[in-house]
Image: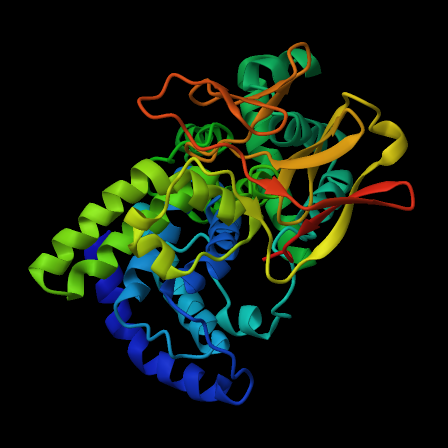
Length: 191
Length: 230
């Protein structure tokens, strides 16, 4: 984990410089110390990682990896905007190498430019994800929507979902699989 | 397409476990993306655990000592360890309350006397309504959650108080015991009175009392002074 993060960093250096110059005029505020950098960014970064990997252990590891990788190179004299851009760029690289390591392909990614451009004071709690998902489920064929609703929104086990829908366990598995692929198509279309 | 592996991936997400390595094809990858988005849309799941935030902060604090002389490193580790024993609860509460502790406070852990009740007053903050005064009659307790703070407001014989809802041990969220007037930590079974004092604990060291938050009543509403959302 460490090694990949540092390897990742060496590739970032050039990119970082461009972001740093790009942002210098935007925000002149600085953080008093590392602790402030950490506290101001940890929740945001964790939420971003969680939204990309969907499980807590990976989100925690990747968040930690970003901070560890950024710890050395980052100067606390950098402006708030620079620090955030740097953390985001590090996060993008850390996430990409996580996917390559585990699945040999990138399942999700971080769009640094879009994140940097998004309003800085958005409270991290505020997310349109729940609404988006509700809409997607509503658009799916009824049984597809139902099984995903049961599994992901109501935390039913596969067995419970099968019982609730009055189908066999193996049918529930197949249905879930198809529903996910259909949902993926809808999500892709709505992006 | 690899149904079994994909199913295992979905199960791992739903149980908050680390999904296993496999070689997905393009269809699998699509389904994985959908599963991640569905999973991540749950607001309760998307929040970092307070213990994680505290632990990582401590680790980073220790890592930061790495550039200094061996003596300093040792000193900083010593401090870090003491910080684990005494400071973590405070730090956890501070993180939840959005209060930024000065690094100096952390590094000179020996000067802090823990166990002194702390009033958490953010430098920048706003009064947030958390309950209707009419609902908070004598002896009533109401949990509240603002963007940055979790806690309980209590009507203690006509005086309204607010305490942090985060255990001072490792930052777990406290639960109100409705029959006994106390707040209980589900993680290590510590319990606190409604004004924040430790009633029982099974830890080697007594955890500090819960910090109080500034509270006022205005226009029939109970309001708590909380830091801006981070």
